[in-house]
Structures are given as structure tokens and as C-alpha cells.
Length: 299
Image (cartoon, rainbow, N blue to C red; front, side):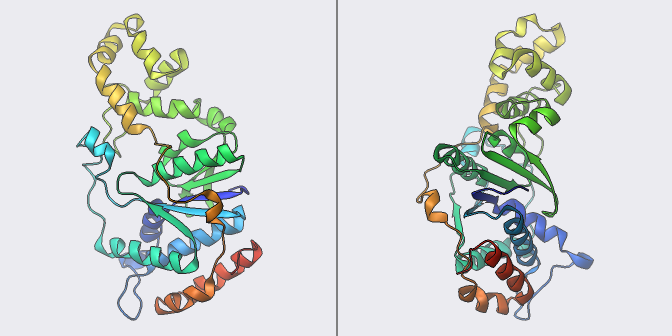
């Protein structure tokens, strides 16, 4: 991770990773009152580590609330293959959000959109205001948000190991521009999100097509010049490819009830201390306090 003015976090992605990373002995940790806390504990550890590395002035955490977003209206099978999350994890979404609210950390969720869309909207606002932004997530879909002034960090193991992407490193490692990340998914699909793409077109073929033609639209416009088998696939699945592109495109105009300037980081640890003690997370609180103090954000 690198220093930035604004830290934008995919809360759902971090919490899911934190939960499964802390299933010691296959069992989630509980507080004395019976509430599950391993995900909350792991999340706060990752959040604190990010504050230590990025030293942001502003922080926003985006959350998913449902899979029934506008993308399901476009394609009912979108993410339909995913199973339900464990109850022990689902419970911790509300617990984590309550702790963050007590700490005074800005958060947002919208049932019509995914966390990625909120992050995309925030990233665009960073660009418009000339602030350096960093997106922290485990979802590679966010690579399309890479831009001058917007860095995307993809989690690998916790937050100690991340892949850091700028426009230059994205081109170097993927051979693609940020907008071509969308076209790549439109052509090859994405099994994790159940985005269909063009049957028979894998990553290697999709990248070759984009290297030659630049965009999905140009691939479609020049389909007749492609080898016969590939041409037939592209022509037959033209509408599916265009739909896949819409599904893969992160929205950057989610209506937000706040401005970036409203998300100034001020960690009110004293307000959250009672909740953290009830969850038996005093050690996490101590480290968070040190990180906030070092970042000049202690309230």
C-alpha cells in the first residue's frame, strides 16, 4: 500500500476475508455474551494496518447489502450460483458496522448498487477534486478504477500482502488499460459473478483480441475478419458480450448523501470503547488508538 489522501475500503470484501482467515480450529471466536467476533477482530486488524500504511486524511467504507441490485434486473442469473454466507459471518456485518459507526468512520451502502459501485463513484470524485485515492479490496473487478491519482490495492493475504496497481503497473502486469479490464470480462466472462461472456473465449484469446482491436465494440465491428470459428462465436454471442460488459462495468454515479470532505478521519475511540470491551477486543482497540494517533486522527 502507498500513502493517499483518501482511503476507500470494500468493507464486505475485507470482512469476508477476515472471517475465514480467523477460523482457528474451524470455529469462529465468540465473546462471553455469545456474539461472534472473529470477523470483527480480523477486520479491525486489517483496517488498522491500512491506516498505518496509507495515513489517509479521509476514509470511507463501502458495503454490499444484497445481491438483488440493478444487475439482477439486467440478468437474473447474475451471482445466482453463489451460496449463502455462514450465519456466524452474516451476524458480524452488523456488529462491525456498529463498531465503525461508534468510532466515527464514514460508511455507505445502497441496496440498488454494489460496494464496487460506491467505490467507483468515490474514486471518480477523488479525480475530480485532485486528491490521491487508494481503493482497498479483494475484488479484481476494481482494477477498472485504476487511474492517474487512483491506486487499487488487491488483497492477497490479509493486508500485509497486496498487489498495488497504477495505470503503469496494470499495463505492465496485465497488458491492459483500466477500461480494457471491463472488455476482458465481457469477452471471457467471469464465473465468480456468473457473467456469461462469449463461450469458448478464454483470457488468452480475449487479451489478443483487445491488443489487436482495443475495445469490445471494435472486436464486434471487425468480427468478419476473424478466423472462422472465432468469428462465428463472436457473431452468435454479440448481444451476450454487450450485456456482459454492462454487468462488468462499475457504476461511477451512485447518489451519495455526503461529500468526500465529510469523511475526514477522526477516530473517536472513547465512544467505541464500551462496545469493543463487550466484544473482548481491547487489544484491537489499543492498536487502533496508536494508528489513529500516528495519523493525527485520534478524537
